[in-house]
Length: 144
Ligand SMILES: Nc1ncnc2c1ncn2[C@@H]1O[C@H](COP(=O)(O)OP(=O)(O)OP(=O)(O)O)[C@@H](O)[C@H]1O
Ligand SMILES: [Mg+2]
Image 1 (cartoon, rainbow, N blue to C red):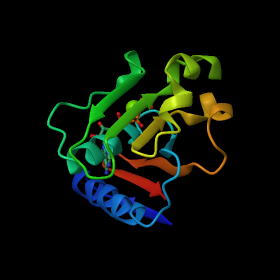
Image 2: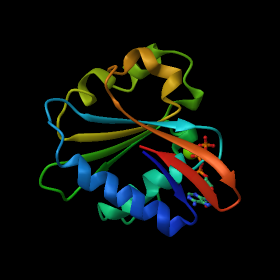
Image 3: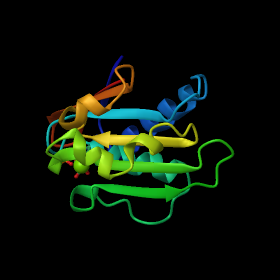
């Protein structure tokens, strides 16, 4: 489904709807969400909206230079929100260095990955996918 967001508020609403629908998924491993789209298309902004909904107060800056950030959640099901920016990763080997095997297996983790195509071999084929597209200065197409 393609949705046109015309503002940050609309992107937050789309993030909220996305999380609410997730409650229907099954949870045997981590919930892994690949955020696809060009530079500036809204991947970090979407993750910030998700963090806000989970009540995370600290700034969710783009983890480009950090690569991985883990936030503890006060949530009965999801215990950690993990934000990975794979832009600077050269290979899936580097995912292993981030502890990918264990974090991706823990059903209490919800993981958002920017630039998932960089590490696609490490991701389960059936991970959730969201596509972002720049439309105009304040508009982004979000396909869930
Ligand atoms: N409707 C909208 N929804 C989301 N972001 C928007 C919207 N309109 C404008 N923006 C702006 O677009 C920018 C998106 O930047 P963001 O850092 O989220 O992109 P990104 O996809 O993470 O890029 P990168 O690949 O460089 O990490 C932000 O500055 C945000 O304020
Ligand atoms: Mg980003």
